[in-house]
Image: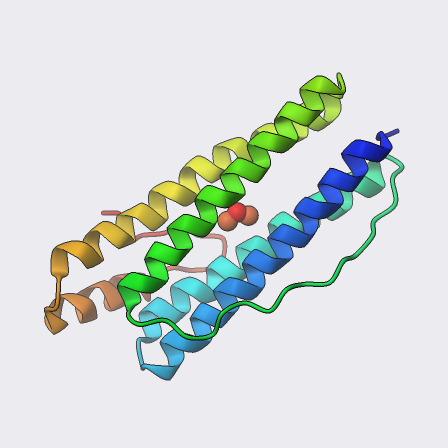
Length: 171
Ligand code: FEO
């Protein structure tokens, strides 16, 4: 059985993952509005991936005999100044999520909740990958500067992301 404290914290993370999905869906809509379909595609799968993260937390609470409590999901921003600004915001968001996951691990350790600790280790590794793939796109955008040709090249690359596939942009 999961402790009240751990249950509440994981419920909070479930909400944070749903917000992440909402945020990336909003970024998808932004890229669609400026006709960068490859970027939009990348954000589409990113939003889906966040839903799978949310469901992992949802299932874990139930598996441990806890009770899921769905909280209100905050509205994400809907406008950015450039593709680079979107990826800067994405990296910042993922770094925040990494901090949240680390906080959960620390709580699991304090509570001597080994099951939660083991469950959370998957997310610790996942965050390393998430930050790496977002940084990869961001670095490419920075290198490209204002050049339109570069933007379309990255767009073509990001169009290759497929369901369940990790980012292909870092290469
Ligand atoms: Fe669920 Fe992007 O971390």
